[in-house]
Length: 262
Image (cartoon, rainbow, N blue to C red; front, side, top):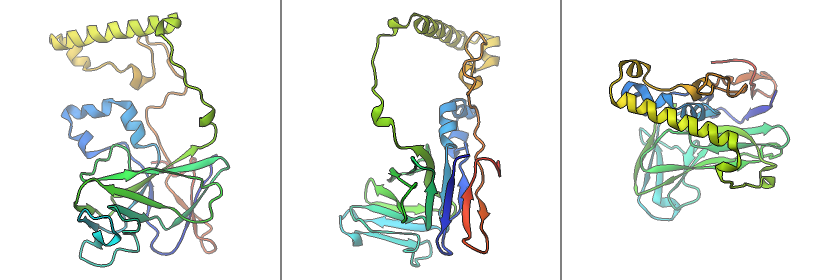
């Protein structure tokens, strides 16, 4: 079991919840076809969301100084306890009010919620070595133009994914002609041919093809022949809800991958 502990600091600590696969814009697509893209839906739920505890308004006038970005609650009150201007240059900074601890060699990838679009502002990714760090980190967003941005109550402002941060520098990418792997080349050609034939039948209105609607090989983790493609295939993630541990003593919140499934 991989360790991910969030030590709560003070009463302002925001909620941490398992991310969900759904997105409003995906649900609004015709016949919800966006959900047919399994890489999208898996990415959507590959971590935990940190939720904004109160609606906040951030306004940036385009200047580089701290005072050029003003952050308030929706009713005009002070929001510094959760978000503010700390770096200038149109950067909005959120406080997580947790100190995180992970296993040795495991960092937290802090970023915006995948495929959650927000006009006028973009999330800044960070990799934090939470296996040893004894202080907190912040989540930052950068305005893309002067304007006014609202983060609603319970809207995610940070997405956390544990990641191994050692070993990537030892990876040596290679580029090879696909012909150097005859079996792979043949499988790819078969896939391409069947995909083109399917799309042609779909465009022609073939009733059987229209009823099928789309080819589900990747969604099912199978080859076009029906053979199992990957024994580790994942079509849906069920991450654990944070549960309270050490209540009455350290009152920390521990995230486990073995309980609280949603």
